[in-house]
Image (cartoon, rainbow, N blue to C red; front, top):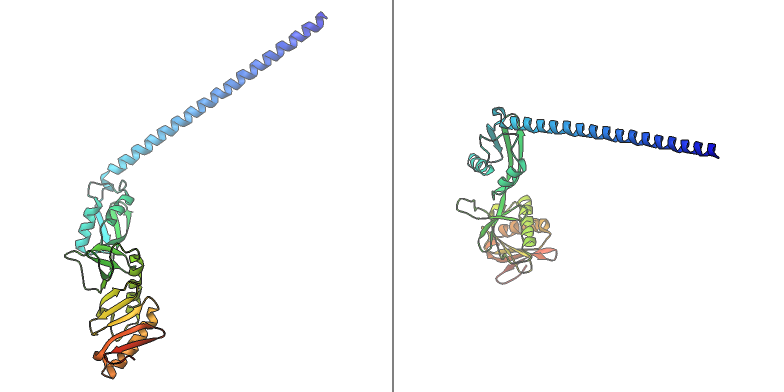
Length: 275
């Protein structure tokens, strides 16, 4: 019995010693892992500080100072305005220029539709812009300029061009105004493609009726032409034929109106008849 007790005690002692060695080994491995992690983080920190310091040094270097701002897509007067609007000067580093911020500043100019800013190392900043292209004047509470998409992009100012057709019959509170202007834009674009007898430059006014139909007035016609709300290409082609016929028969100045939105044909109204 005593021998069994001694053997059991020795077995327990060996087990405790083995467990203690395992714990010390695990503790050592854990400590070594912490040391490696610490060294890794230390190296990473040193590397990051080096990168930041290097970037700051390059940013402040004379070699990367903005020396030229190349602006394309505008004339000289607009170029000066855009450079000033960008906020960039010769003290700025090409590396530190915030491209997105510069683009946003330039897009604030009412005549700028799109802008792209890029770097050209070592010292040039390129600004490429696309300007708005007005095709009509819209009479609202003020006279405004409308682009090819039917979007009113600015109020007319003193030096703005105004040799465009005038759009009437709308107000800013009209919920359908955007749709009406898109229709006007579609008509003008289509007319510029298909017109021959009466060029697009002869359009003086486009009146938007309450139902959205378009009534068009021409400089060389003493009456209005109704185009409705769609199928403009077909109606424009038909109008050309009607105008030619009226000119040949010397009836053009006797007409009172032409309705191109009458089923599948145009209707000419005279003082005493409709044909």
